[in-house]
Each structure stands twice: as C-alpha cells, then as structure tokens.
Length: 278
Image (cartoon, rainbow, N blue to C red; front, side, top):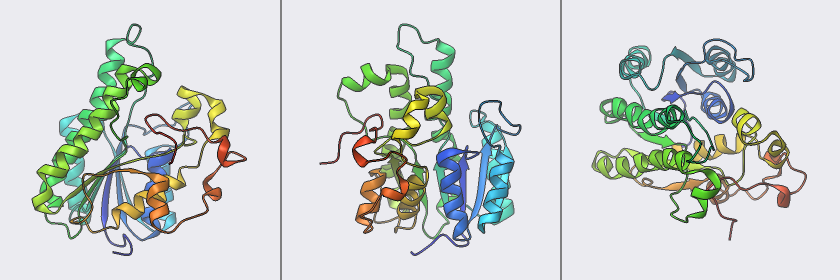
C-alpha cells in the first residue's frame, strides 16, 4: 500500500513532538487523524495543545478530530473511540504515543509517579488498543503501532534509566508482543517503533537534559519510519520492534543528514535501550 489517504488513525497524545510529527505525516497523505489528549490549554513549559496540533493536521491535508480526554480513564477512551467511528466510519490505525517519563531511581521515586507511568504508558496503550479491536477487525489494513523500545534484559538499562521507567516502557512493548499473537489470525498488525538516537522533543529538553537537543535527530525521522511501517501489509509485518533508521534504510534511505541536529553523525546520542548500529 502506497499511502494513508482516506484511512483513519487514532492516537493517544499527539499535541507535540513525535506524536504530532506522525500525525502530520499521515495528514500529508490525506488521512483522518483523531487525537485523544489532556492538553487543551497551553502549558507554561510545553509547546502546543491538541487544538493547535489539529489545525496543523488540517493544514497538512488531513481531517482532524481533537478529543480532550485522559488516556487513563476507561470511559473517556471508549467515548473517544465511539466519536472517531461516528465521525469517520471506522478505525484503521492505532498509535500508542502517550507516555510519561521519570528517571528517578527506585529509592527516591514516589509511588504516585510510578503509578502515573504505569497508568499512561502500559495501561493506556493496552486500553486504547483493546477499545479499537472490533473496528480494526473491519479495516482493510489494520495496524497498532506503539512507541516503545525493544526489550533488553541487560541489567545496565535498569541502572542507567531507572527501574520504574524501564518497567513502564517495557510494559508497552509487552502490549505489542501480546497483541501481535492474539490478533494474528485477524490480520491485525501490532508493532513497536523506537528511535536509535535521542529525538529533539520537550521531554528530552525538560526531563533528560536540554543539552541533548543538539545531539539529537528531529521527530520527522520517527514520522517517516512510522509511515513506512503503517503502509506495509498488516498480515506480513507484526510482532516487530523496529528502530527508526533501520526501517528507513530498508526503504532505501541512505542519507540521514536531513534529520540530524548534531553537526556530525558521531555526535548523535543513542537513545535508551538501543545499542550502536552494527
């Protein structure tokens, strides 16, 4: 399949960063893009709202449906799914993008923060995917794409990233693994996508370290990689944990300089849970 024209995508989050970039790439094909997020009002430290993202989607050539809601709220998610189906007639793609991050070590992290990450990252991905399954079964090329890493049991990641955040992100990846097997017979693809390098987002600037922005790639590399995955036949590609530049390299991309904010490739900072390319 060559594009996403006329297809309907529902995304958790999407008011900024990687989620917004994925939405805009789909919109450029003429897709319908629904976003469920809490960001209805401008945040003092974070750019954009769900409504500004929706405006950009429309300007890019898609149809937008911004839905104010909490991905942790069962009824809010089910209501959002119903609104999408009523507006666009069905759902073809689910993108589990919403994610909370806290790198605090186990000894010091508060359980409210631990629960927040579990509720948004793992439970939110499970809930949105679960709510869309009946509609995905009716789609021509249904995909669930979750922005989560390949699971590595190398202990270094728990020490570097923190046990709490690692558990929450690996939980999202387990959603991918489980859904890919449960839904295989239905022809519904479930895959994960993760960046090789850090991506210049508000989370990187505000949580991990502002200095990493100049060692990162732009969100557009994730958007282009997501587009490549979502346009593949769902019956042929499922249960995979994709890395953005590997996806694009397989599509024939050899020059990644347009995504690079760092001066040189060797200045790029690897993201969590990713090893150098072999």
